Structures are given as C-alpha cells and as structure tokens.
Image 1 (cartoon, rainbow, N blue to C red):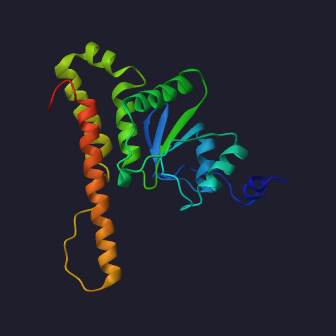
Image 2 (spheres, one colour):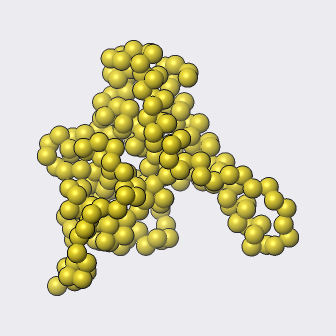
Length: 212
C-alpha cells in the first residue's frame, strides 16, 4: 500500500485552509503545503503546483514531490533565491503565467504557486499572472493603453504585495553582544535588503512602459 493511502486513511479532507488565497478560477497562492494541505488542495481541484523555493534540503522538499506524485498532482520545481539575487526572467514569468492559463482553460484543473511563506517569490509570480492572465505583456499593454495598464499594474501589486505580508520584516540595527541575536539580526537584514531589491526589479519589469 502506498504511504499516501495510509495517510489518507487517518486524514479526512476538509475545507481548504484560508492560508491559500484564490487569485482567480485558475490560480491559488500560499505557503509550502503539508501533506494534509496537498490532500485538501487536490480536493479543491489543484492539479499543478509550482514550487519557487530555492534548492536545498531545508523543509524536506522531496516529501512534497513524492506526495504530489502519489496524488496525481503535477509538481514543478522553479527555484529562485532572492538572497542570492536570483530573479525570474521576463520569459520565465510569461511561460509560467501561460501555463496556468492553459491548464485551466483546457480543463486541466487549478494551479498553486508557493515558496516558503508565500509572501515574496509567490507574490511576484501571482501579481504577474494577475496582470497578464497568461497573455503576452506587450499585448496587454497595447490593448489597455498606457494609463489603464499602469492602473492595472498598480492594482495587482497592491493586492499581492503591499496588502499582503511582502514587507513583514523590518531592518534591525539593534546593537547587541549576544552572538545568536547578532546573527539573527544580520540574517533578518539580509532578507529585508534582498526582498527590497527583488521588488525593485519586479516593478521595473512590469512598468517599463510607464512609471507610476
């Protein structure tokens, strides 16, 4: 008997946790899922998952891959590390957004975007999809025109970044002689600076036609 079947014998699917947010009928976004979450997501109609976490063993990423395989969910690793300055290219943004649209339109089910917390890499990917809906960004701009495009871009960034937890960390310049606290503060500041740089990159990418 498959391990996932044993797990399902003891876990009964229920209402999907509100930590997973609906973008539209084709896309959900949120933090990395536990096995119980995957079962609920499958019940919700999710058939494809994009995992944007960077490579590594932290969080036992192989468990999600295995569980998805057993549940019949397509699992796609698309790793990026803002700490290392690794950002999705314009082509990668477009390809992933197009995949969500095609999967949904062809009756293939819903897609889930997630990273670690669902607050940073996931926010940018979801915002890009929400802006383009899988259409070429040049076509979106030409169809809407400069003013409406800028308004739409501002709206999706507000919804997916500013109104969520994108900037939940703040710089901490507290002076301390405690080595553990010093290391924690240093790491926190690295994350803050990395996410700010990534956000500047993302804004530049989607607003290259007009500043707002």
